[in-house]
Length: 398
Image 1 (cartoon, rainbow, N blue to C red):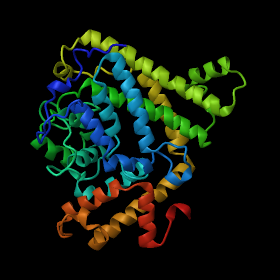
Image 2 (image 1 turned 45 degrees about the horizontal axis):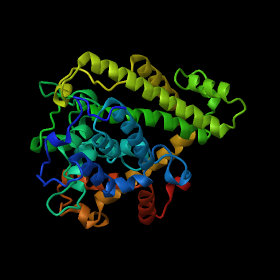
Image 3 (image 1 turned 90 degrees about the vertical axis):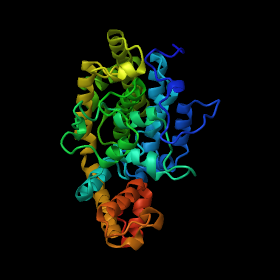
Image 4 (image 1 turned 60 degrees about the vertical axis):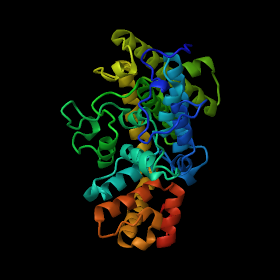
C-alpha cells in the first residue's frame, strides 16, 4: 500500500487556507484539524439520533446517520490509502457529508423542501455548508468551523461541478438553480464551482454510495422487508450470495446476510480501485489542481458497476423505501415536520431566541430560514418530543 502521496493528492502544506486566517497547530495538519472540528461539532453529535430509513424507536441495530458516516469514513479512507490520497481530508469529507440532513431521512427533507418553496427551498448539501460556515457557533473569532478551502470545496462539489463555464447551474441544480447558501458563501470564498473537486472528495462520494447501498440492503433484510433469496437474481448481490451459499452451506441467516453484504462491499471497492487506477493512468494529472480541471471524475465505478448499482437501487426502492411499513411511518414523519413548521411560523415565541437571532417574523424569508435551520437540525427524537409537547400527540405511534 503506497504511503507516499500521489502527485495528484491534496497537499495540506499547500492548502488554499481558511476564510478567517488562523495560525497552524502542529503536529496536526490543516486537514486533520478540519476532521477534528467536524467530529467535535454539535451537528455531528446529533447524527446519532437521525435516521437513514427507520425512525429511531424501531430498533437499536439499524443505521443512523452517525453510524453511516463512520462506515463511509472507513471505506473512503481505505480507498484513499490504496490510491495515495490524503487520508485526513478524505475522512473529514466522509464524516461531514450528512451534516445537513433533516430528521426522518429523505421523507423529512422532501417535506421541508416543500414547505420552504416560497422561501428558496431546502437542500441538504447547502444545509451542510450553512452548518459548517454559519450555524455552528463555538469559536470566539468566527461563526461556523472555519474549515479549509479544500474541505468546503469537497463538501459542496463531491458529486461534480455545480455550474458550467458560463455560470449556469448544472446537475441536480439545473432546473432550480443554485441554493442561496452556496451562492452567498461562494461570493465570499470562491470554491471554483465549475471544476471537479479533489480526488479525496470523489473518493468520499463513492464511499457514500458503497455504504448506502450495501447497508440499506443489510437493514432491509434484518427488518424483514424482503428475504435474502430475493437478491438471487441481482447482478451485484446475487453472485455474492451464491458464493456464501457455496462456501458455507447451512450457514444461519444472520451470518449469511453479513457474509453477503461484506462481499458486496468488497466487490464495489475492488471495482472503484481498478477503474480509478485506469483513469488516473490515462489522464495522468500532475497535481490536484490539474485533476480538478479534467473533464470527468477520476475516482469512479466502472460502467458495469454503475449499472449493477442502478439495478440494486431500483430493487431497494421497490422492496424497502416504498415498502408499506416504511411508507406509513414516513408519511407520519412528514406530518410531524409540517405541524412543527406551521407552529413556529405562526408563533415566534415557540422558536428559541438563539435561533431567531433577532429576525422579526415580518421578514418572512429570513424568519422562515431560521425556522428551517432549527427544524433541520433536530434529531428524530427531539422532533417527536417537540410535537408531543405542542400538540399532545405522538403521531408515529397512533
